[in-house]
Image (cartoon, rainbow, N blue to C red; front, side, top):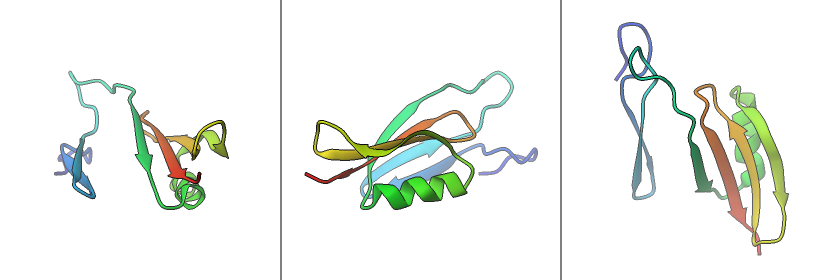
Amino acid sequence: FPRPDGKLMHAEVRIDDTVVMLADSVEGWPPVPSYVHVYVADVDAVYQRALEAGAESVQEPVQKQDEDKRGGVKDSGGTTWWIATRVG
């Protein structure tokens, strides 16, 4: 639901059977950094789309010592999104 000042009062994003609720910060409710980790079908494509939408790179997608190829971006609200694809 948008607020009259253009900020987001409440939004819900459904990912499979999970609902994530989001809102912009407002007076009395300052932004709080958070970290979200999600699995996606193609980490490289999602990472690129996030950058094109204005996100800041935290880490380019790379596979380290586990079965995931993982990258990270930070959105304009300060949330860091860790995105991964299981590759191994």
